[in-house]
Image (cartoon, rainbow, N blue to C red):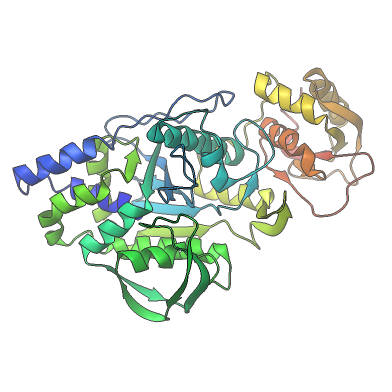
Amino acid sequence: MIAVLLFMTVCSGGSYALAKVYHAYVAFRGATGIALPTVDTGGIQPTQLPPDLTNLHYFNLLLLGSDNDAKFASGAVLTQTVIVVRIDFDNKKVTMVSLPRDLWIPNDRGGCCNKLDEISGNETDGARDPQDAKLHGFAHTLATIEKDFAIPISAFAWVGLDGFVKVIDTLGGVDVDVLHPIVDDEYPDDVNTDNPYGYKRLDIPAGPQHLDGRTALEYVRSRHSDATGDFGRSARQQSVLAALKKKLDDPTLLTKLDEFADDLKGSVLTSLQIPQVVQLAQFAKGLKSSDINQVVLSPPDYGQLGNADGKSVVLPNWGAISEAVKQIFPDSAQGTVSLHNISPTDAQTISQEGARILIENGSGEAGLALKLKDILTGEGFNVVDAKNADRDDYLQTHVQLFNTKASGTAKILGKMLGVFDETPGIAGPPGVDIVIVIGQDDIGDIT
């Protein structure tokens, strides 16, 4: 998260002193160029990034932040921070999109559902080496985001909390305007402690504050102190990133290469190669604050609070998320209609859920509901009826989910029809789990 930006910065100071640069190079070499393992996700894999970014127009980077979690014996971690960063070289812009850790979404294998932050801890494919367990978890998290949000991701970076604290301290702290008091009686006291389940009281006053490493960590990590709940935390994380950006032009950073290398040892993993990191650092130095856009996909605009499997979760509003994704990520896979060639993984989900599907034709083009019924039935879907919609002027196709036990099937249908599925929040037609309303956008695709 935060340290990755600094990690890019210190790597760009290669002309300072050979001994220091070499020490940093050796340390960073072990953390860079880390390929995620190939995981069985029905074909979803990271989009390849060219070695030289010079002629690249843009790419999407997944930033993950977590503690070095002693709660998992395997070395796996919960991804407490999930930010998709859109790096637009052509327009000299960066957009950071924070995904709430409590989003209740299907995992990359189509299983419904998981909290987003739990995927990295749960899906480790039996890996026993701590780093392998992390990488398998990150691979599944990345594939989940690519599959559920239709965002192609070309690189990842992970930062552990211990490294975060050390780097901020080496920097001499960061200056942040705390918008309101942070008072948290249930803050996890699990960094550099023998008790990974400990808690303590946290109190950070409002106003301009100079935060050392531990306090900065507490500021971005606290979950119970914000009027907007966990979503305020995402905004706080991005505000600290913005504050850290101001440190990039400080020439004294180059005198601390040894310290930064030691700080980040064991606390950073990224698929980026060192030359790519250097190019990104140079790009970041040229950005103004106005060039960095911050978005948090949080309720009420992008979902609603709810409960599932005894957990507090965020139920996503896929319609609103779809619109945001289209605007921020023009290379999103949304809008591509592909009605055939169901993957074996998807076929298994369709069979297991047995979702009852109603198709309604709202396009004004006669016969489309029956045509789509024939296609979907041939692919193994359970279509219970096909008829005209309440009107014939729908501009866009909709996939409406009325039974959460059919979430996997709804996701598959949305992917096939080039849309996100929606949860209307009302009771659906009797005996129906999913309703597809065909809009005018799909008239030429249903054949």
